[in-house]
Length: 217
Image (cartoon, rainbow, N blue to C red; front, top):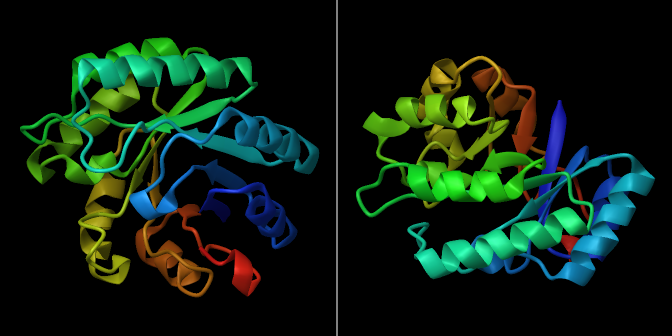
């Protein structure tokens, strides 16, 4: 199983690597759900990931709250994407949802163009998309080259053990080649059970591997 950890600093990244993590999602401000990290932290993480031979994903998100970004915020995200590419980042994660709870295709297209040739993951903004629109959103994302979708299967206030049925539906509806990455409340203690329930081989969480107490996020 591929274990991806969400974290926000280099010390935690080192500890996670020592404890067997396979992939890192680098953020700042995990208390806000993860925002774009600063360039120095990204540069250090790129070097550390290369040394440890693990994959690195960098969050592109200008603020907390919803995912209905203004044109000015989209331009800020595009600038962030260009900086990440220059720093050697290979994979980024972002997502845009409009006020009607639909995938914001026009704004996503602008970001996808700016991200090239980096790989793109659509993050938990997916859970803000109306359920009736999620299958169509998955097809669109796959058609536009997105490699993974990170999803909790519902609101983060609901434990992932209670969103399993909808996560199973999302896994079933995903087009071939698009990986569904369950996250939000996944821990090293429940990861095995979730993997069996969902028939997935990748999971995401800030506690996906055991960490020292001062590193627990």
